Image 1: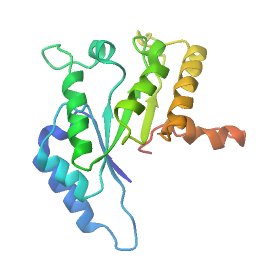
Image 2: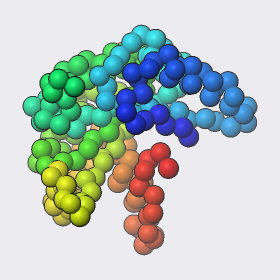
Image 3: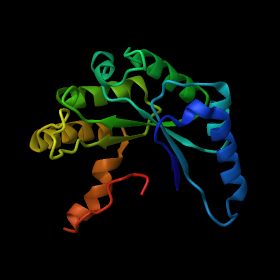
Image 4: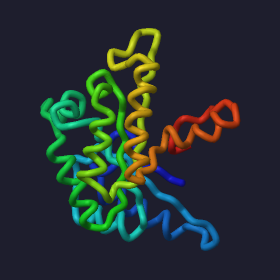
Amino acid sequence: KIVFYGGEPTLNKEVLIKSISYLKEKQPKDKKLQIGINTNGSNYSKDLAEAFKENNVTVSVSLDSFTEINDCTRVNKEGKGQTSIILENIKKYIENGVQVSLSITINDYNIDYLPAFAKFICEEFPEIKGVGFNLPLDSRKGNKLFVDPEYTGFQVYGAFRIFRKYGVYEDRVLRRLKHLLNEKIYLKDCGAC
């Protein structure tokens, strides 16, 4: 499994497309290579969509909540919200046959709306069959977006139940579930690990 992320991988689309092609070319015939990309969703091109579809690349788009909330934390270099562009690009990727999932970072802005946002996603984008919650971490210096863990668990569970009702796989909860049931410690939290 190879995941492109960090910064914004789609900014250099030529290198990204060549890298994906190279990986597929070098893939051993007896192995299935999974390629993913984490993106802020602000860039779309037909070339990228074709490369993603042709190579079965899963595109995970960062989208944390409804427009008014998402625009508080997901802004461009001019400080303007990008949500309308992100939603339009998600639709374009889906229309072009790209497998899209969502990466939802939980924060103080969106915590109250997770279940409602889950329902919105399921109804607005029924093609999306995977999401992942990114949990906020506290630090010694303090994280202004950190939210109460107990309340976070309650809200994540509410959203999880809605996603399951619509047949959407929520990565963070389900990845931990078997470890919780077996009473084992889960040491790897990164989906790319």
